[in-house]
Amino acid sequence: MQTAGQGDRSTRTALPDESRTAESYDAVLIGGGPAGSALATLLARAGRRVALCERDRFPRDKLCGEFLSGESRRVLGELGCLAELDALRPAAIHACRFTSPSGAVCGANLPSPALGISRRALDAVLLRHAARSGAVVLQGAPVCRVEANAVNGSSPLECRVHLRPQSDAHAVDCLTAGLVVAAHGRRAQLDRELGRKFMRRAHPYVGLKRHHRPRTGAAGERLAATLDGFVEVHAFHGGYCGMSFVESGVVNVCMLVTEAFLANLPSSRWEDVHDGLCRANPRLAERLAALEPDEETVHAVAGIPFSFKERSSGPVFFVGDAAGMIAPFCGDGQAMALRSALLLGDLILQTPSRLCGEDHRILARRWEACWRREFGFRMRLGRWLQPLLLRGWTADAALRLATLAPKIPDWIARATRGA
Ligand SMILES: Cc1cc2nc3c(=O)[nH]c(=O)nc-3n(C[C@H](O)[C@H](O)[C@H](O)COP(=O)(O)OP(=O)(O)OC[C@H]3O[C@@H](n4cnc5c(N)ncnc54)[C@H](O)[C@@H]3O)c2cc1C
Image 1 (cartoon, rainbow, N blue to C red):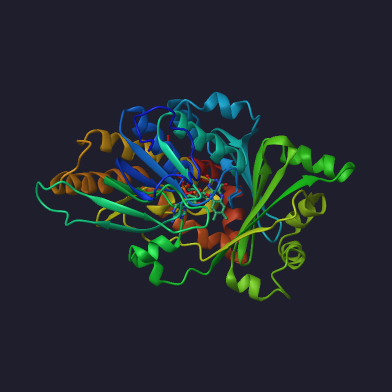
Image 2 (tube, rainbow, N blue to C red; image 1 turned 135 degrees about the vertical axis):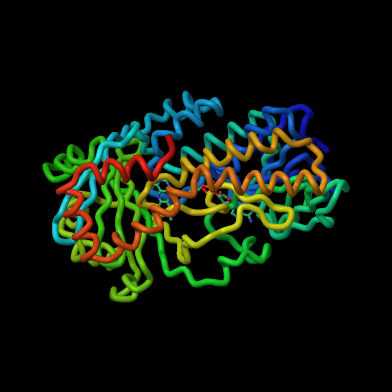
C-alpha cells in the first residue's frame, strides 16, 4: 500500500484491490477547504506525514460570497499557489459599498485589493497543491468518528480517525495519527459526534447563493460598470445580500437571511426569494433586474452558527470555520481560514511529530492564546455589527451615520480583517 513519504502522493480515490486497513500518519486533517488544504501543504512540505480526508470530490461548488480578502494574497504566496490562482483571472475588487432598505449608501476602500474567485476554482487549486506538496489526499472520504487513547503525561497520543463506509470505499476505513486537526467548516454531523456545545443551540440563519451574469443590453452594461471593482452588501429587514464579480464575468449573488425572512415568503423557491429581496431593498431590486441566473442550482445551507466554538476538544484541534466563524458581511472567513492554518501549522511544527499527552496540552494552550490574539477582536466586532445589518431600521440608521462620518466604514473595513 502506498503511504505518505513514498512515491507519488497525489490525490487518490478508490483502490478496490487493496484491503481495507488502517494507515498511520503524523497528522490526519479532516476537510479539504482552504484551512485544511493550506495546513496539509505546510505540514507536508515540512516533512510531516499528512493525510487529508475530504468528504466531497473536487471540483465542487460551495456556498460562499467568494470574496477573497486582500491579506490572503500573502498566505497564498507563502503556500506557493498565487501564480496558479492569478492564471484563473479572478476579478479585482478594491472597494465595498453597503446599501440600506431606505436607499442609504456608504462605501469604503479596502485596505488592500481583494479577489473575486469561485470556490469551485479556489478550493480545487488549494487541494491539488496540498497533494503536490506531499499530503495524501483522500476525496469522497467523510470522517464519521475520532477516537483516542487517554491524553496524559508522557505516553504517546494515538488517535483513530474513522471514515464513513461508502459505496466508493477507500482502501482504508481508519487512519491513525498522533495529531488530528478538524477543518471541516462551519457545521457538520462530525460536530455532533465530537459533542460540541454549539450544536445544542438553534442557529436561525440560512445562506443562499447563485451565480448570475449581467443581462445583455444597457441595464446589464450599467450594472457591470457599477459593480466593476466593488463588492456590494445590500441590507434589508431579515438579511443581507452580497454581490461581486468572480472569474469569467460571472456575478456571485450570495445572502444570509433569517429563517423568519424565509417564513414570510410564499415559498423558499428562488423566484419567491428573488421577489422578496426586490421588495426589501430598492437598490438590490435594481441590481437583480439587470442580472440573469448563470446556473440551474441554488446553493442553500441552513443552521449557520456564529456562536462560540472551542479551538480544541479532547484529542482534536480545530482550524478555520471549525474554530470560529466570522459574520459573512466582513468577507474575511476564507482569509481567516488560510491564516489560521498558517498559525496552527507554525505551532505544530514547533512540537515533536509524535505528540505525547503533555505536548498536546501545551499545543492546545498555545493555539487558544494565538487564535484569540489574532482573531478575537474581529470576531467580536462582526458579531456585534451583524445584528445591525439584519434589522431594516438599524441598517438605515447605521448607514446614514456612516455617510456622515466616512472614517467609520474605513475603520470597520480595516478592523474586520488582518494586516
Ligand atoms: C452566506 C455566507 C457567505 C460567505 N461569504 C464569504 C465571503 O465572501 N468571503 C469570505 O472570505 N468568506 C465568506 N464566507 C465564509 C467562508 O465560506 C468560510 O469562512 C470558509 O469557507 C472557511 O473555510 P474552511 O476551510 O474553514 O471550511 P470550508 O470551506 O467549509 O471547508 C470544509 C471542508 O470540509 C469538508 N468536510 C465537512 N465535513 C467533513 C467530514 N466529516 N469529513 C471530511 N470532510 C468534511 C467539506 O466538504 C469542505 O470541503 C461566507 C459564509 C457564508 C455562510
